[in-house]
Amino acid sequence: MKTSTVLSHPNIAFIKYWGNRDNALRIPANGSISMNLASLETRTSVEANPEFQSDSLTLNGRKETGTALVRVQAFMDLLREMSGNPYFARVSSENNFPQSTGIASSASGFAALAAAGSKAFGLDLSEKELSMLARRGSGSASRSIPDGFVEWHAGKKDADSYAESIAPAEHWELWDCVAVVTDQPKKTGSTEGHLLAGTSPLQAARVQDAPRRLEICRNAILKKNFEALADIIELDSNLMHGVMMTSTPPLMYWSPKSLKIMQEVAKWRKKGIPAAYTLDAGPNVHVICTKEYADRVRARLEKIPGVARVLISGVGSGVQVLL
Ligand code: PMV
Image (cartoon, rainbow, N blue to C red; front, side, top):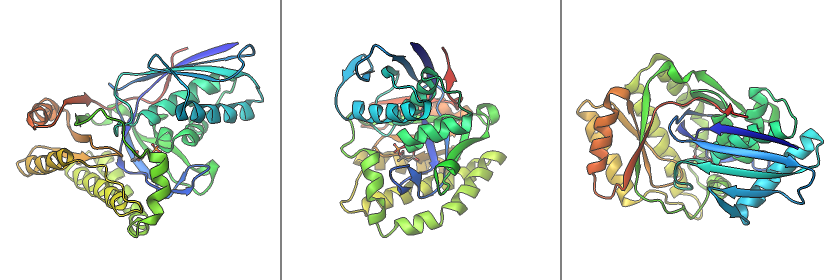
């Protein structure tokens, strides 16, 4: 019997992952860049035990039976195959933030599961191998393994599709102020959404232009150039949502409240406040800003009608094994 407990953080993508070249292996159509979110946390424990008759999953204190459990069982099958260890596992995971609303609980969830699961199954994996493994559970989870600012190299096959840190968490004090407009789970999850990306006539252009955007974003981070970062992350978010809105069937993740916030953020930037928006697969708006402006941006967001609350976070570390 072996138990391991791990702490991980979700990440917010600056250059987005949307659509796969290989759905089964989750090899993405394009590379992506993100930053980990320090104050949002997932804690996951995995116990592998010869006495268990099946895998079980408890999420935020609730026993899961549906698709969440099936997804975790498939991931455990991978660990059993890799380790040669046939045991079933008891998985227990807690988040300190709402799930399924465009704050990537699947990213921190599968990053933590990869790290805790591999340890509980007796595997000693490198950071690169952990990132590849986490990717199999949820693509963006590959980016929650390394520290700070992270790039996921798209690759063409399993072995070359992994994420690595491009700068440590302390490199640049950026903050993410998440304007939460709903705690309702989204109707179409990203696993389903990725399958539709190719039906949009805009996806090919988005993917073809991705290396250019990745380079601009990487350089903006390395040089701490906020203006360049702001322009490229807003463009990239709009491009991804353009693909989502023009796929068949169309996916509309924005709500009128999201659009209102995006318009406000654009106005603030014109007035000299370093703030830029980006949205994942949900209506909540992530507003990236520099540390000095985080309190002001949060206060401004809280005044916008329809914003239920604002979560704020600095840049987080990679996955940490606690036990
Ligand atoms: O890792 P997934 O399958 O949940 O996909 C994440 C997709 C986005 O959050 C919309 C973009 C991204 O790169 O994180």
